[in-house]
Amino acid sequence: MEMVATTKLRRFQGRAQASRPFTNEIQAIVGRLAAVAPEGSSPLLRNTQLRNTQLSKSAAPDAAVIASNGKPGALGIIIVTSDRGLCGAYNANILSMTHRFLRERGLEERGGDPKLLEGKVKLYIFGKKGYTYFYKRGYGVAHYFSEPPLEKFQYQDVRIAAKQLVADFTSGAVSEIQVISTRFESMVTYKPAVNQWLPVVPPKSADHRSPSDGIDAIIEPNVRFILDRLVPKYLEMKLWNLLLEALTSESASRRVSMKNATDAAEEMRGSLLRTYNRARQESITKQLLEIVGGAEALK
Image 1 (cartoon, rainbow, N blue to C red):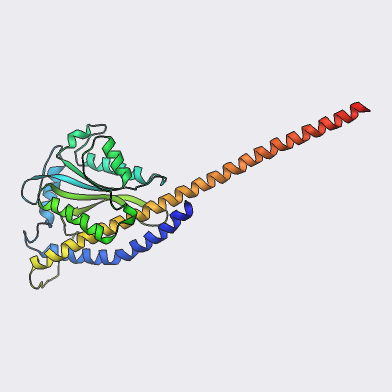
Image 2 (cartoon, rainbow, N blue to C red):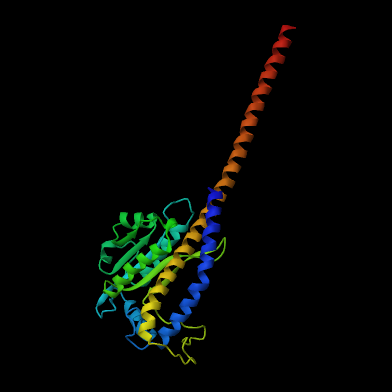
């Protein structure tokens, strides 16, 4: 299992690293367009000032965030877990991050009733482990992406999932969608993180300037035409990259877990072998003593 996990890790790592450059570039382009786009250019965008106001309101318990249609909407959360176990604390970290995120948003208390989240939170889950966890505890799962299995997901499957999620956002069923998944950094470093997926918000640089500061953009034929075609592609690519990094992190975690299990099994095998040899030697020594004793008695 360690060898299988290592093989999958290399395959998923290559795909995740190959998707990063395009994801980063399209994110930069969308960020620059979103920064210069007038209000109302796309239902998938939200300017930074409006977002900050809504986030400050949603910090209070039972606060409703305004959806794209102007009505209160639920908080959508995409949770990416694994379909199989034996991957260490990979799933536990994601589930713990989800509960912590809900508490930070004032939507859940430690040990609270999951039914109180009905109408406030919609869960979209990738991975059997996450679905089983939330379903058994009474959380309402809006959609479980079970087919195909996460390891067999292709870009066209991500496109279908993204269209469904965007439809829920534009219809007002959810006011925003966050992704809780594991970001792969290295073979031994992979951390759960929360990434905003919808609405698209212009990113801020390290010095808190907008990407459009100092940039005079000329957009042809118009902003709406470009955004209507570019933003859906960006959302698909971002979700695809997050899923690939989660799969890579899962394989890395499973490889480490299986290596630890292999090392523990080898140590146990050595200990049992020593115990067996000691018992065998004691038995041989006892038989020799009995033979010697019998020979002495015959004399």
